[in-house]
Each structure stands twice: as structure tokens, then as C-alpha cells.
Length: 314
Image 1 (cartoon, rainbow, N blue to C red):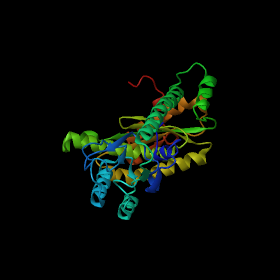
Image 2: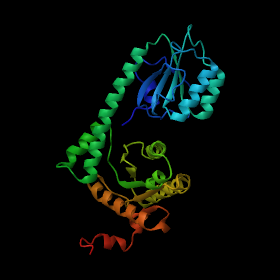
Image 3: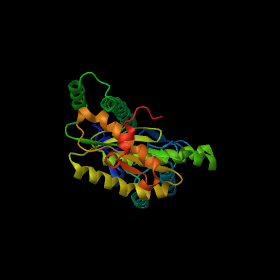
């Protein structure tokens, strides 16, 4: 589980912080708070930070604030917080607000009367709690998908306690991003790593929009998510939505390519391990057969279902 900007603004004690621009990106994840003390931030952030601009250690005129906004967009920080008051930065320039809105960069105003130590303490505590909750939720899902549990009832009870309802029927989606070796052969390793990180983040963000109730499992260019699929109609809608997203995405990603495999529909919690295996088989078919445009559903495998059941492949 991750902490978003919307979560930060809802933290107790931070009610005086006010969103001024970039509302569409309130789902940006906050990795850590960072207080900007230099004229620029590009050298000092890695991406995902919530950057606080005070003006105490460096004068912040309109030109410098616009520079910070440009660097924040380039480095993909979570958002900018401008501290305002009688000293230092009296007000946020309208030009900065307009630019932040156009760029989709959340810009938050914080009064100097709200002490930074209280803000960073609240955010830091929330990040730790979010990380602990996220690990617990991931653990429950991984156990269900691998069948690694002794009591299904106890595991489902734990899921409910963690805010996850797994009642109903599901479809497993497996995704894999390939082609990174071509990028490393063409460009500097540092730039390639940064590019891959941006692509991974963009894909993860889209998947979180598709799966709002349950976390996304993923690492190193591989993702797994659960989508509600009580019947064949819902499964077909899931496939269509993913296919419409995948085609233009792969055109932009080239030479990278994203492959997707989906299980059949109507899997209850006790059959999620089976659904996971179906999604893996569908993903393998999507990667192997180019005519499938990078996506395959288990129900489409036909005779490949029989071949996949043969233990002795030789």
C-alpha cells in the first residue's frame, strides 16, 4: 500500500494545507518529504518526493519558482508545497499556479504557522504505517495466489482486517515488460535505468487505476492484479479494456513491449492459485505468438490447454 497526496492532505493536523493546482494528480505516491534549500532541486531528488519550498535559505522569486516547477516535472516528484506568510514567500504567483495546472503537477500551499517538524513527522509516521500495511496485504495475496496457507478461512479473515474484501469471483491478470536488453545495447546504462523506472511507474499507475480495491503485486517489470469477473461478460470487458490500453502503449514503448495474460473468469478465493496458473499459461502464449498482439486469455488457448497439461514435455 502506498501514501498518496490525497492521503497526506487528509492527515490529522495538516488541515491548513491547501491544494492550489494539479488536482488531477492527487493519486501521486509520496516516497518521502524533502525540503528544498538550494536554488534548484534536480540534483537532489530521485522522484516521488513531496518537495517543500520555504524561501528561508534561498530567495524564491517567480522565475525561481517556475524553475523549480520545471525541475519537479522533469524528476517526477510527487508534488510541490509552497510555504507562504508575511516573510519570504508572501503569495504564490498566478503564473506558477497556471503552469502547475497545465503540467499536472500538484501544488499545495502551506502557511508558515504550520511548523515543518509537525508536517514531516505526520508524513513520516504515515509512510511507515502505509509500508507495514502494504506488506501485510501483499503477503495475504501472495499466499492466496500460491496456495501457501493452512486455513483459507483464517487467511480471508486476515484480509478483511487489512481492508481487503475477496468475496466474489475474480480474474487474474499477469503482465511482463520485455526488451530492456535492446535499450541497454543502444544507450548509456544510467539513462536506460531512469527510462525503465519511468515506464514501470507509468504502467503501475495505470494498473492501480484498474484495481482500486486490491494492491498490485509486481517487481522488475512483472505485475499481477485481480479484476472482478463474476461472469463471461465481465471477463470480456476486462479483456477489451486491457487491449485498448495495450496497443497504443506498445507503440510508445518500442523497443520495449508489454505482454498480458488473463485467466478465465469466475474464480473464487479458494481457486486463485489455479487462476494464477491459467494467467501464466496465457502470458506464455501471448509472448510466443505475435499474432495475438501481446495479449491472450486462457479461454483462447484451445489445444494449448491440453499441451500445457503434459508433464513430460519431451
